[in-house]
Each structure stands twice: as structure tokens, then as C-alpha cells.
Image (tube, rainbow, N blue to C red; front, side):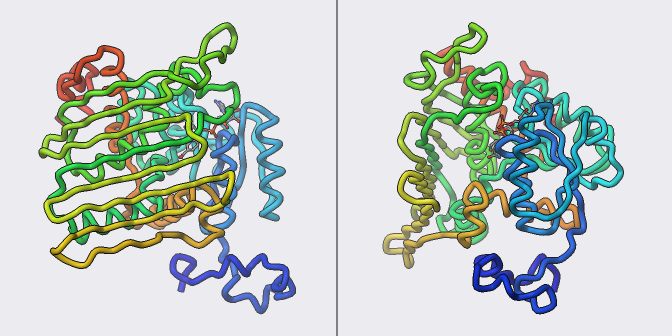
Length: 407
Ligand SMILES: NC(=O)c1ccc[n+]([C@@H]2O[C@H](COP(=O)([O-])OP(=O)(O)OC[C@H]3O[C@@H](n4cnc5c(N)ncnc54)[C@H](O)[C@@H]3O)[C@@H](O)[C@H]2O)c1
């Protein structure tokens, strides 16, 4: 049995009553030597999350880190030392971090606007790359990412990790594998949450650096809609604004310009109608997926009321009326996995990465899927600006995306 399928009891592994169990007697808690070593570029919030999750999963060791701000690298190194005894290399420049022959895979965890430049440098290594979402802030840069990936000797995995949230994994199984609802007709997703958190340099308060709210954050949900629709978008309508958040926030004389609420409607070419609602001035996190098919309805939801609980509460409802048994269930990963980041989605994203390094085929996001998530986001932002629906084929031609989409 390998670390891929051996059961682990992480809850007990670190428990005070189990620390006396020496390495010789550790079976359920034993750790395999990771087969791969990763370098992390950008050690802010998500870079640190990847370091924490990697040390928990034990299939990819963290070899070294590089951040252009020493303060971020200092904090990341200190955080890492709390849950790993492994030594960590600290690079002084990005080229050394990317070209070190002792690293097998590179993580790009820098702000959105820098992804394209960092990727160009990283891609000179020929190593497998994990690239955080959104893979770019503009369609031109997203097109370039796909071009790089198409000619690349290794894989590039995009960090669209909501695919691995517990409730959505189960929803995919019900709707796409079991086909419980029959043919899907409508899909609605929504996210209610507090404002964007503080970031290094506050890059997420400006569309120029983040790509805009629908690109920066909502690419996750557009990716989910695309997965469930299994079709290309035909027409997109949207409305949205900066209603409440950061309306008095300025940096270097520039006012924050990111929307905090939006409603997006997507007509897919196969006749599925979809919608997405965003609201970012709520006290806690709530997201929901509602899918209706010819045979019933599925609701997958995740609530994270961080002021009262430190775990998410995920639910799945499959309502089939008189046709078959309905199901109302809680969905959860184990507590240590849920608490390691993004309610366990980051952990399973790492499982997919390690599987992909092992040569297995996985369902993680490709650069092409990353591009589609940005096409919807950018078209929605265009519709908000113009007040008009966007015809996606025209939008794609206008942005010269046909060649990378294989058309
Ligand atoms: N998958 C997810 O759900 C998820 C969650 C959070 C963030 N992200 C993405 O991860 C990326 C980073 O977000 P964050 O929240 O960690 O931001 P952050 O501001 O907390 O950290 C970014 C770090 O990158 C460093 N940096 C900036 N430019 C750099 C460069 N050229 N080279 C090296 N280091 C550089 C900064 O100094 C900072 O320490 C963004 O693209 C964001 O959208 C994804």
C-alpha cells in the first residue's frame, strides 16, 4: 500500500497521548518519504497554505521558497517550522528558484498580474508547474498561458480548487456520473461573503492588478458552471457595482475600483441556462449550487460562519419527488484536512498534483479550462460596463482567442 491509499489517522498523529509512539511503532501515523520536491514562488496567504498542506500530505516536500519581499518569506519560513522539521532553502532571486535542479515542481503563488511574467521565467525550467488562479488578469495574457502550455514538455496545473470542495465533488458525482437528475436544464451558483482580505501591496483592490472581481474571485464559480454545463457559453449578461466595500480606500492616490456585488446570466450552447450571484458585504461565507434537471433538483451548499465555528458546514440535497428516493446529507472531509485550508479543497488539489506527477490522469484544471473561466468573467465584466449582452463567439474573435481554442 502506498501513501496514495494507505489510511492515516491524522487526528491522533499529533495528539498529546500519542507522542510517545516512536518511529518504529508508527504504522497508521507513519510518513512516507515524499517522492517530489517543490519550490514555492510567492509565500503570502496561499503560498503558506500550499506549504502547510504539502507537509501534511507528505507526497511533495517543500524544497525552497522565493518571495520578492523578505518579510513574507520570513513569516512563511517561521510558519513552516511549526509543522515541519525539514530544512527550507531560501533563494535570493526568481531564476535560481526556478532553475534549481533539485526541485521537481514549481508553485506560482504571486499576485494575479505577475503570473504571466513569473510563468515565462518558470517555463524556462521545463519542470511541471502549479499556477494559481486566475492564471492571468487579461485575455491576452491568458491566451499566452495556453500557448506556453501547448508547447510545454511538462504539465501546468491551474489552481481552480473549488472542484475539490466536498459538496461539489459529491454534486459532480450525482449529476455527471450517476446522472441522477437526467438532462440538466438550469444551474445557479451564488457566493455571499465578507470583503476581500488585506493583501501584500493591496493588489486585490484594483482591477488593473487583480483582473477585476469576477476574474479574481469568481473564476472559481465560472469553472464550476462550465464543468456542470459541459458546453461552451453562447451569451452572457451581467450587472454589478462597487456598492459598499472600499469606497473610501485609496492607495498612491488611486481609488479602489473593484465590484463587490454582481449578477451574471449565462446561456450555454446546449440550451442550459446558468446564473451566478455575488455579494461581498456579508458577515460570513455562504455558497450554493442549485441544479435542476428533468428528473429533480440538487442543492449543494457550504456555510462558514468563522465567528462561531472553525469548520465549514457542507450539505447536499438530492430531491427526486415521486420518482425515486431523495437524500438530505452532510458532506465533510476529516477535520484536520478541512482545517488545513479552503475546507479541504487545497489538500485534494495536492493529491491531484502528486497523482499527476506520478503520471496518472487527474481532473484538475488545465490552462484551457482556466482560459474558459476567464472568458466568462471578462465577458461578464464587459457586459456590466456596456449594459449589453455579450455574444461569446464575437468576444472570442475580437480577443483573438480562436487559435488557442482550436478553432
Ligand atoms: N486557489 C485559491 O482559492 C486562492 C486563494 C487565495 C489566493 N489565490 C491566488 O494566489 C495568488 C496569491 O494570493 P495571496 O492571497 O497569497 O496574496 P498575498 O498578497 O498574500 O501574497 C502574494 C505574495 O507574492 C509576493 N510577490 C509578489 N510579486 C512577486 C514576484 N514577482 N516574485 C516573487 N514573489 C512575489 C508578495 O511579496 C507576497 O508575499 C493570487 O493569484 C491569488 O488569486 C488563490
